[in-house]
Image (cartoon, rainbow, N blue to C red):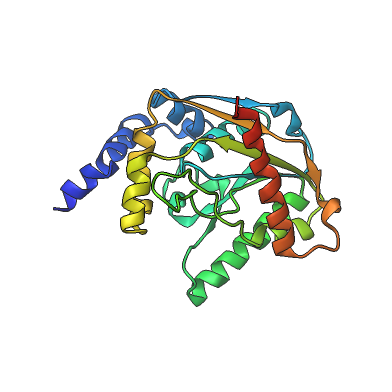
Length: 250
């Protein structure tokens, strides 16, 4: 039964793919590009010159897909500079090749998880203060349809983004990803919300041979948010980033 479930949700396929193609330690610096190539996923991000080649940077992204958006932004940044990290769901850190690039966050609210997340947040702040790039998907969850035949809506951005911004001096680069997950993903998610997380493998597989678009919006600087609260900062950047949709309306 477990094998059947793993096959249905794409886990077995991804496991075999990993065992076949990811046994070279040199892939540690090329994981993102290798994965995109294996799935023949193409993309175009407009205005990548807005991402500074040096100095502290915080890149904030909307989260329509779950895996593909992470692969694309990491691939893009890795081609510009090597000093980057991603603040991301702890489950992704099970992939050993990319673990060094992650500041993992646990999604539950257990006492040990809160302590774990505090360390990751502080490590992320220190990394930016030292001049590195931090990539964040502040919603912490994939965009969701409220009604099955409507467009998916980006979740509220968590206040951890504001907390990091208030303690750093950095350029802030908002990146908008255009699109959303499959109808089946949203349908099953409405029937049973936790199903969404185990559907991510299948969602990556069905992105094979597809083309994705994104845009880097004009940058902010952390100094522009002096005097504002964590939630206010996160909300303002969410609204600003989602305006990127206007670039793809035509």
